[in-house]
Image 1 (cartoon, rainbow, N blue to C red):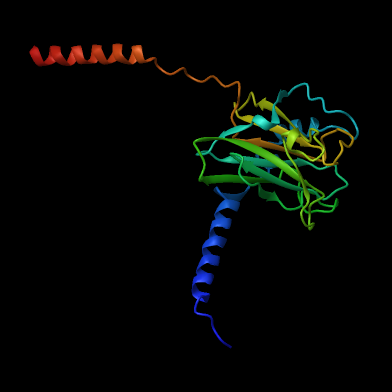
Image 2: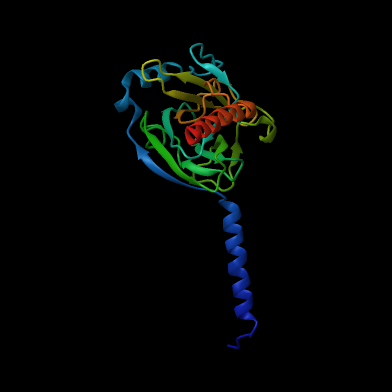
Length: 245
């Protein structure tokens, strides 16, 4: 077989190109580990979230939870995000994915189906997402589902922004809840998996996340520049007095 002398350059170029595509496909890194089942951590809290899961074909209405913009969820990328699977009421075998800072989605749960319902998940089962790399200090966090995507090629992704969904409809809904006992903040999220709207009960996949930003949390206002100057002047004056005493 004749070997073209240009082959090494072509191979090198292909390697570089594949590396560039890989970098583009995964612009951020993270670590995923198993979490202790939420029911084992806090049975009362798990039962509360379970009680807010909608019945089949009933519109979502969680009076004890505060409605949120599912497309506006944020998180501190130096912190850990905990995700717990609460319920699945789907006829489909959906996949659960997440995205950070608008980057390409990453797989979180390959088959978001319960035991005896086409999958192996247990209610309360969870995952810890940590050690985020390649992201700004604060970033958007989005959950998506691949509708009936398990073991399917090129499934349809349905995310929090209706304008980016193929049917232009809402498929992800979110609510905030603060546990009065611990002070921990949770985001309760439900998905509608049927393209075209479905029954709008948003219980096809239900999860809760801990570690996302509470939009109502009090944030200390930064000290004004004038205040900084005043404090600096006082400190300098004190230093001068010590020197001249």
